Image 1 (cartoon, one colour):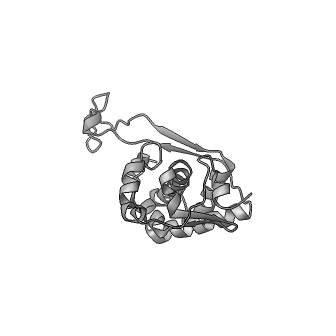
Image 2 (cartoon, one colour):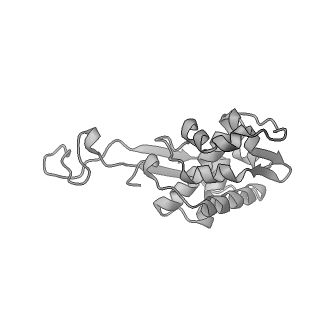
Image 3 (tube, rainbow, N blue to C red):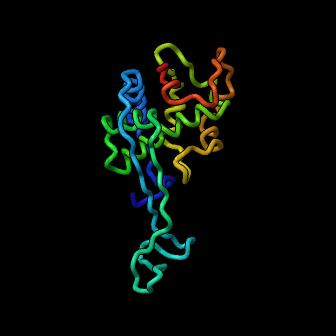
Amino acid sequence: MDAAPQALPPVRLRDVAAAWDAARAAAHAEAWGCARMFRFQAPLNAKDGGDAKDGAGAKDGAGAKDASPATELALADPDACCWAAAVDATVGMHTGYGLSVCLRLLALVDLLARAHWTRPLFRLTGGGAELDPALLRAAAVTPLNPQARFDEAPFRALLAGRLAAPSPASPYVSPHASPRMAAGVR
């Protein structure tokens, strides 16, 4: 991929929602998918010492396009592989847009597992996790960070109105919950 994770585009809410539903169904069916490796190679920009448009930062002086160090992301966890396969079947992952949908879905699951403040916005049931639609809206538009995760502050800022209102008792969710557990698969 010729862009860093944080340069991937925002996506449509309906695509994130469809991917969420497909991933939950795949987890229930135990359709684990295969391991995947992603390599993100972002061109240098002026701040890094070159201009990706004209290759002015090229080391050989010939104007060739130079690139910054690559970021590699391996999806080997069975849960992540399952969810990635479901996204691939839903919107495809052969484009930056499809990859953005997948990484946003995985970043959302990661955020739900580690950020205790999200608890009022979802419920775990026998059928899986029920999300407040605001979570999917925020996942669709919040930029990913260089590690293909969501930084909490901008994500939380988009949910400020939803977090201010008290909600019914939220179930405790372990910060170590896996996507399989978040989908209700035991």
